[in-house]
Length: 357
Length: 283
Image (tube, rainbow over all chains, first blue to last red; front, side):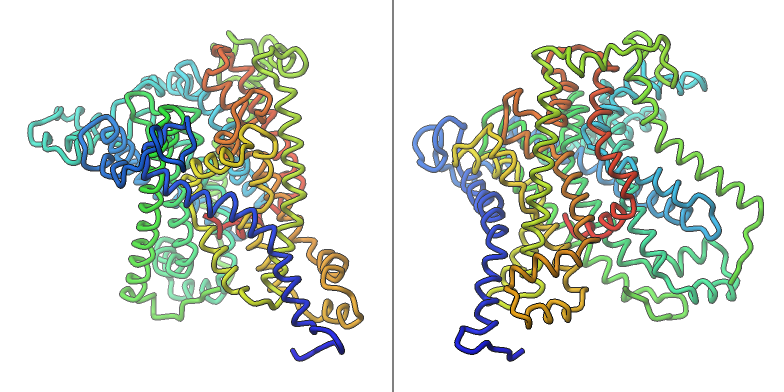
């Protein structure tokens, strides 16, 4: 565009000034409350700051300790490491359950709602999506009541003659419970220690208490992901349906060989967002468990908070947060790599060109 | 094309959908009903949707007769004021930045956009301590400034607006500018009115986001009078205010926290749905 106004710096020049003016509030706010603070926290993670003095002046209460806060998390035997490793173990199980469950439920609901000729489509979509827009704290409160020992879930279980667990005070792991049912209890072969925890502890499975949080999160997030899947399904060309119908493929085959490959970008997005979200679970923990019982609902995000604002070990808490940050970055990278690789290897049904939006 | 669905399949489909719908909606009905129950009734009949006896105790406690340790009305006022201020500021500042990144040619634009994307990918868990550090450093800990100022711009909102402006033809604004209107003038009276759908989506996302916000207020405030409904509810539920079980009160407070977003949701659903798909970009 070569338009210039006579006698001035020209539209180009005015645009330059206006452009910077327009983005300056964003740069100031995000810089001041996001970029610089992260750098400050990186510094604090290298100190033993206890919250009482200025963290950037050194001296007692804010000494530079190098990478000790980080090495303590992995290499030094002690409470910090055992808590941190337990929180990592808990989250590992949590992610393992939540991500596949919420992805499958979201896709399932999307396929149901997207059925042709379905009546009251809007109603069902609204019903499934509504929990996603509410406050995580409010909804955790509701679940706290639903799963309390005298709550609705236990009333329901009692009505059909099943056991009524004490959900929030039960620290037994699901895998331990399963193994216990076949008579395996803390066997000698599971006594090896990895990072300060026995294999038996690592493989405990999510505790009963953590399972409630898994239910809650799957229930509240599938609605959002369902909408993403619906959008992707509606973008599929009609011809694909016709071709599949002509081929006489069954519903399941069509889903596996036609639909899922074609919505792969959305599937990738949903799984990635799921991974990023699950590693950060905090609000629900704050309301429903705070790490109890026996640390089985501790997550790194909550532990980092507790270590900083509860125990005033900000350096250690910040170090935990950065480790989680790193885990999230690595996971999304692996995820991206794995999915793209698979894409090249597995041929789509009859090599139809993948339709990307 | 018209694959006929057998009646049996259709029945199964509807049964499945209805069962799921109950699973997703029934907890909210329980929540409403329980807030009108007495404590013993709530514990004895947790599944029932009919309060017996019908009891307004919880609601009286929330409106007016709240104790000093549970000042619901103050929290409500905080929630409303903060959500409104943050929403108005965000919609304006996000559109300004989104417009500049989409339309205005200035040196460093590519860098600013790349930096924005990088900043957006920082997970919120890594921001708890940083936010506290900065707020502390600026000496604004436990003030409304600390609650509001860091929220008035959000990366995802800027991104949504930029995407929107990218998709709008440039011709109308060019005509306005040829007529000699200034850049801001063009933005304000020509561009923004055209951007209505995106602005509504952004308004909803901002209101919902700031109304439901928890961690930011958790690390930047501590006193009772700076709590919002969400942070207040969290401390009520986690037992810090020493109120005991009292499920009707807690569920009533949770309901109150849910209602404003629910009302907007039911009124402006299609914008919510658009937002959910666009919000997919944020981490």
